[in-house]
Image (cartoon, rainbow, N blue to C red; front, side):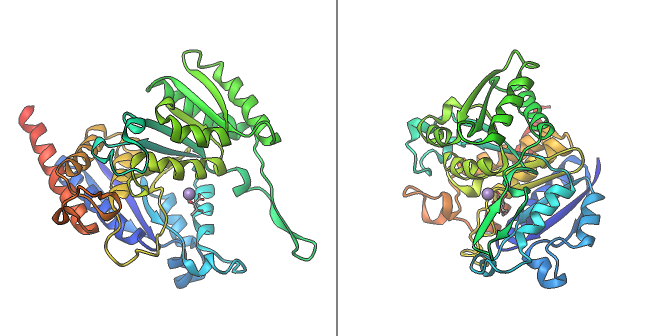
Length: 367
Ligand code: IPM
Ligand code: MN
């Protein structure tokens, strides 16, 4: 298979982790005889420094003409501490999502058994958790009208949803549920928000086409509590952009660490794959970032954009084997981790690649 992949490292640890994600894709190409052609483009603070724009035209053109995108992160503390700056790294990410029509953000929360102890939640509550979030990605307060009035003393962000936006993400969630435990939890705040009442109405309507899937509704505050109280009670969760952003950071604790969570953003064209973690400037350049979220994002890329299930599975197995062998980055290490098993970013990537070779060779012997 021949495919064009654009690597978008972005800011902070984005560069460090996508280097490892790319290494994994190269290894897969070599072992399975695919041809992956890589290109790199800039986004975020990195791009602002070089061109003045968080998403330069050149980057957008490359993205519109490739088969899949592996993205790192955007953000810089300089902007977080100065809200008056008009051009901001995050605008690049939001514009990219909108321009590429990436309306569905899939965030699988799967706990590797080896990391049961890494979470701050009790193992008996966590064991067996497996949730697939569908976060709507191109609507809501993120893209509604925003501004200031009263000489800057009043600020507003409009929470807005259109019927078709809810319909298309709901369909994706119900379709996915059919391949899983056949349950969808729709999360909203319909007791207060009109946009949530539309959301609930539309999800109910769409659900009629999926009589084999159980639908339940939860208010976002209750859902935030239940995620931690009984994570196993969830299968597929579908929710809006803002609620989904918040709930998936919370849910990352079910998987042990933000450093483990991959995501796929899909729509009608090209797919984009990225960790849910941010640019993490506090650890940038130290070489200690966990590359597993980027590596698992590469696994999602192989599966969803290229339909390469066996290759994707090999990457996931390799991550599992690496964890089984006791290797950890600092964020997922616990008191039982041996000091010599704590790896830096590059070592973790190299270890996973070694495991991919073993996993694939074993499969070949079996055949
Ligand atoms: C995410 C991030 C982004 C978001 C930021 C960087 C704009 O937190 O992808 O979850 O809020 O969507
Ligand atoms: Mn987020």
